[in-house]
Amino acid sequence: MEIWFQDEMRVGQKTRRTRIRAKTGTRPRQAADPRTGHADLFGAICPARDTGAALVMPHANTQATQLHLDEIRRNVAPGAHAVLILDQAGWHATGKLSLLANISLMPLPPRSLELDPQENAWQYLRQRFLSNRVFDSHDAILKAVCEAWNNLVEERNRITSIETRPWAAG
Image 1: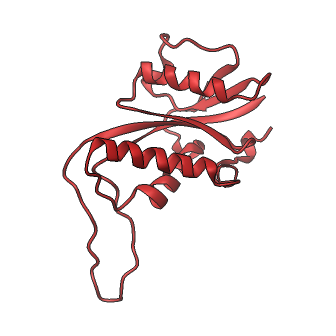
Image 2 (image 1 turned 90 degrees about the horizontal axis):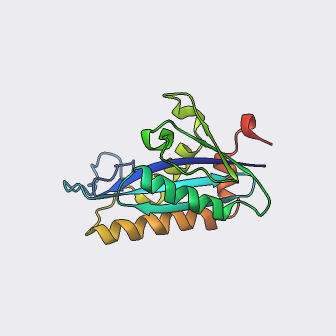
Image 3 (image 1 turned 120 degrees about the vertical axis):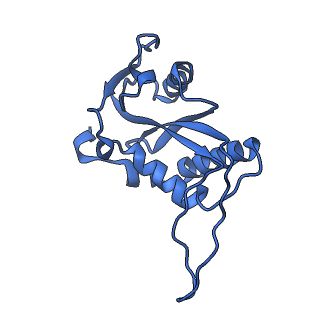
């Protein structure tokens, strides 16, 4: 049995501003963009295996969720069954999803972001790779999101270190 955590993150031209180093008494300038183009990163991680599965989609909806479930299924270890812990977004709870033989969905209680370790992954990606940036185009957003996710899963033990929860340890 494998425990996976799943969530979505919107990344767009309006990026978050984070703290930056500057000389005392100065006001550093940070990039800002009034445009609203975006993409949704569907990500799932398995802390025990230090691995993840993701798709970048134009919108968060039932069809995108189904495609992401298919991607997760391909990444579950052969012969294993995945318990996928996710929030209660409307596109997760719909009866239109085709559940797969090797995945069971386990929704978190409503409004309980603190229980979702995937939020830590989003915070890490935003702080390390996606904040204080201006993207020239939609393609630039897609490229940055893919690079950020790939950096996360390629960094040895990063997923395990930021995602492991004692209550979910097998």
